[in-house]
Length: 343
Ligand SMILES: NCCCCCC(=O)NO
Ligand SMILES: [Zn+2]
Image (tube, rainbow, N blue to C red; front, side, top):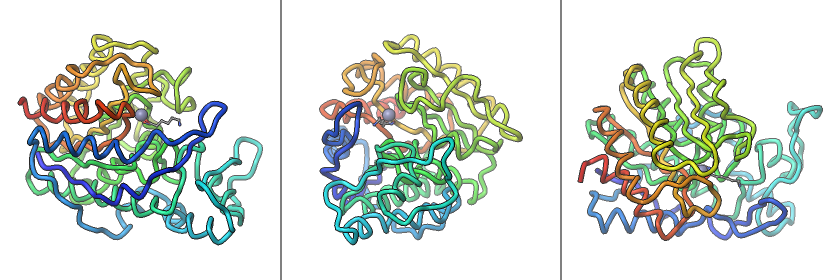
């Protein structure tokens, strides 16, 4: 399996983030991608290639243009305003406020275009965002070109980013962009299987009223877990999309057997949908030692995920999402990929 990777991710470094009651060094850090890349090399998964560069047209097929156009201006505006440290919002247009008038101040605009304080900027962030998007499209073109599978080693991740907003370390929804790209290339149906610990609220929001992209999410119950405000089992899609969004919320402490029951049901529904391509939003924060998550999967479980997905017998694009147990992230993420290849 080929891996697409860009060293430009490393410029998104040193950002701080707001968690309950404190501002701390960001969990979404460069070493995550480096540990995964090292494991790809040590496991001899296959060639590691640099992404081709793309314009932002494919991003704007999914995201609102004004949102995408805002992203590269954040850091210059922050510096221009004489602000220092990590660019992050502190005010959001929630219920009872106006969300139709973008304010002039950059910190207010960050709130206008986000749902939490988790998508922050430093000088190299935009270059990293763009490279992650290029990685996803380059890997997608490999699958379109006949590769059974490809691994988009995306950093920053994307599944929390909606059509017009960022959040949860996500800016451009790499998996959603790839899904739309496959559709624009002639694919009729796409399934996105999101195995990250957190609900992919952005991916759900983007495709919620569409029947051509099936979205299946296995995740921590939003009653008690981030992103809290989307991801319940009763969210099944709207209009033409009714029945094509499937959520599997699970409780804290979920172990392999319980998690696998959701995976089996999701794979059955995915097979019945018969997509041309499967896109896996590959988060490995389901791991028992993940510092910000509450599931109990163990490292030997990850190859089982890959093997089960391979049994679908469909072209598969893996897009990296979350996972913060950095020491084991490579073993776990690449374990899915070697399992997929039944190695
Ligand atoms: N700062 C709140 C937690 C962000 C979770 C990011 C993630 O792993 N999403 O899949
Ligand atoms: Zn996650």
